[in-house]
Image (cartoon, rainbow, N blue to C red; front, side, top):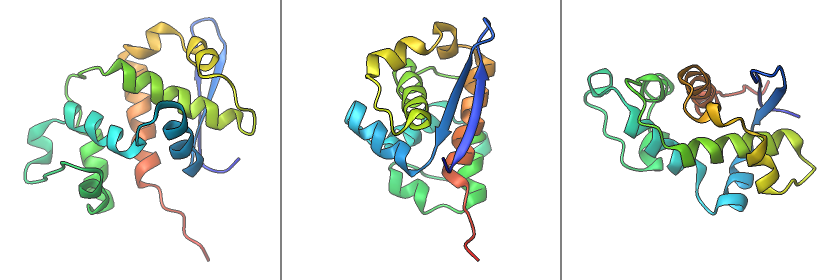
Length: 144
């Protein structure tokens, strides 16, 4: 499977594989009826360190798409204290897990119950997800 791949380990030593690629956007929309990029922008805006991104206005997904790579990364990484949006975090994790399991189409409830509850508020996990999110948005592959 192509895309970004990350494996998170639970306290019990279980591995949870996350995969992010174009399919993730479709899976997210099919499971939750929401646009992933719009939710990423909302999450980034809620957690942005305003001083770190002065002069940048992001109100829509199109606004973030119009930014250069460095500015997009700055917006995603400019996090102060996290304002947790547990629904987004759970949905994003579930979509990444479902992408990793493709072509299997697991039930959303079974995916969500796979996610340890502490993943939702653990600062280290959220930081890893934010870094993954930044790469997920800004990675460009060059075609020879």
